[in-house]
Image 1: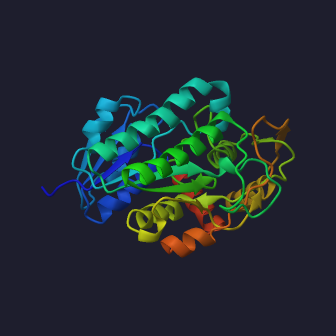
Image 2: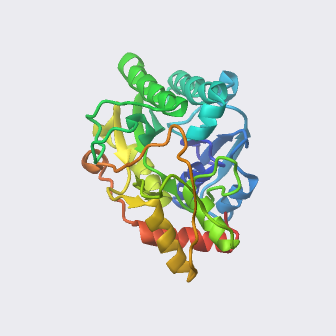
Length: 317
């Protein structure tokens, strides 16, 4: 067997499993590191029958020895492992910091010591906070409103420092509201789209925190995978942080309206008080990723929502 060029931390998770599957489709050999706290065994089924081979290490990025073992002989690390939730970080800031900051530093140290070429880091649009300026661009001041957002910004800064001091190539991708198949709708901290779609499919009332007019730049997971693959080799992206979105925003009310049309059902929304830490509006300026990566978000929101709905409907979650 040829050598393993890629490590995906959180490779059994939502985005990580999609990155892994794409690499395997390309005939690459991939190692994943996952503790299966939010990653799921069922996601591994997506790897069956693909051209490449996958090695699974069950372990936690908070353990440096384990991360060093996973990084041995690897050229590129896609660092997706995280506790990815604003509400979770507010409820439990300690675990969020241990995973999202200390774990990220462990990945960077392991990459440096293994002489990996590059780390592509999953950051978040939450680093911008509730700034009224739209679209959000990388030259804006950051203003995180939650422990999770602070921790993701700290991860970006660690990446930049490891590039400057140690010469480790890093690229930070600020994800904007990623959605798609295999996103867990059952988690206490589930993202809004799988929660909405599951409620509609089970004839329950979808819950909206706030008036539903808050907007997001919802980004289908295949677009995010494309950005990661391109970020693994783009020379001009080294040491940079950049937005990964669609450059379009849609309100939560509109999301439910479109979903209702796809399901040919009326939607009765349960509106509740806004949650602390939630931003009002979000929209990505993606010109930097387009310029440095050649990023092109080909799958727009309606198509992505239809694909996600179909996957939920047939149980490919």
